[in-house]
Image (cartoon, rainbow, N blue to C red; front, side, top):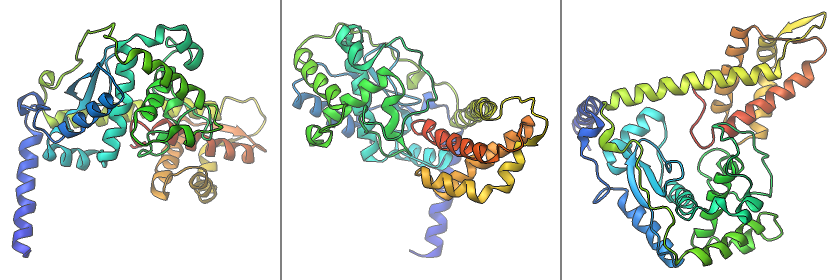
Length: 345
């Protein structure tokens, strides 16, 4: 390809990008039928049929992956319906779901939909296996990295395999996804793991409900794509701003836990610990997490910046223990953001 052809292609995409960013999402006329994401949905339905299910969850386009609370419908990010929007999403956020990830997430959301459709969480056996559905749901969590009490499913995101530990509802959805995945060989893979009990429970439970009619047929679609009456530029601007503010507040709270107020005679600035021991901290974080050097340094620099802004201090003589606390915090932050995205800003 000649240089002029390359230049023409680049210029062409810049024009398309500009036009897309200045259009309202609701005006893009996005539909699942005939779109790039439809084959994945059809594949999910075939997998459910192969398991003998009569129930097939409804699917719609929205702003992110998810099922509305206790509603058996699956929301899929709108940008997956159009290759141009997928390219724009990757440019704006630095990542895009590949085919493997899309199917993993679809199976996960199908788990939620089945749970809600048959109101499984109300069963005493469900509560005994997975815990209380009414447990407070937190966006951020601190999982046990090598626990064998949970399946390891969503693998594309850093440490995403620990997502089952977030909440009993997520535990069920992840376990269901492993059970549903063709050729997952879960009996052998999880042999001698305590989580095998959960998988066997789902296997028994699905034999019972798969030929039944859902107890809940309500299909409320929260923020369907036709309701998104703002431009793509506004969408990405709001998304970035909300994430930055949420991340800042969360990091501040966690830093205050590591560096609580102290009445010790001599207190040292927490920011100096980050600056003097940056190389050692970076090496330890990389060792204990799957982050690369750039990602680990991004989180450490954010912690350093916030520690400085908050003027946090710690007692002299506690340097080594605080270093380990900082490493644990950094790894925990990587785990916390596994499902929703990387820490930035």
